Image (cartoon, rainbow over all chains, first blue to last red; front, top):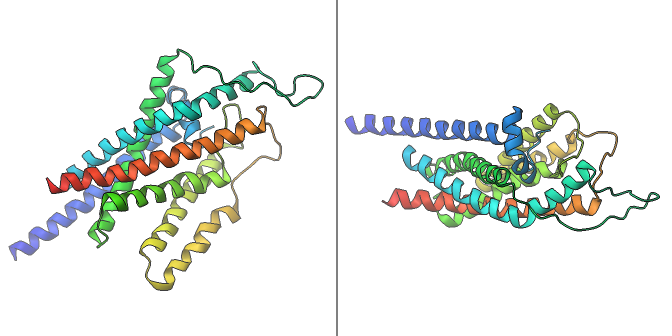
Length: 56
Length: 227
């Protein structure tokens, strides 16, 4: 009984971990590829062109 | 496990970003800066009497270190972002009985290139600075939709049982039948050869970056998992 509970808890935890990783990835990509703020856009400009982000 | 996931993705993302940036400085950035000469009008492709000849010479990438440091930094951020998502998917597949190895990681990386660079790039190729495009919102929507639909199609090919893999064909085609948003006018000021070369070099460096990313994500994660 105890073992089963632990297994379920661990798998819930890892699903949460995967979700956190995906969200963190989307957040970084938003900053580096999508956000329109001038400061971000100018700093990321060459990289955005090289990686073909549709940004302007 | 989450700790291994985050650490491995960040290490792989930073390393792949460095590799991609190095290749960009060798191949892509000189062409980008040559394109800027046409963007600013320093060079004109239709100079004399409508002649479409202009000099082919890449400018030195110059001494603007702040600009180039930003390019390296943002490559690391971009590849770390993609790495976090890619490794989360790899681990999800691993938990469902598709073991992750550095070798299979390489295939994941190439699949990532197909979904994130090649498929959207078919409709919206990489463009030089100064290129005029349609309104950015619909283009970003088409880009994101194409990436997601292509990724689902590749997952069906890789993991779909029996005939379900065939569903990937309409999914792969759909974004291109719908078509990317475009303008009714050509505005290009740079020579077509330069634009084409820039696009091809961008794809080539992105393929190297993505292959490295897939391999390294799997490599770091399997090492950390053994430890």
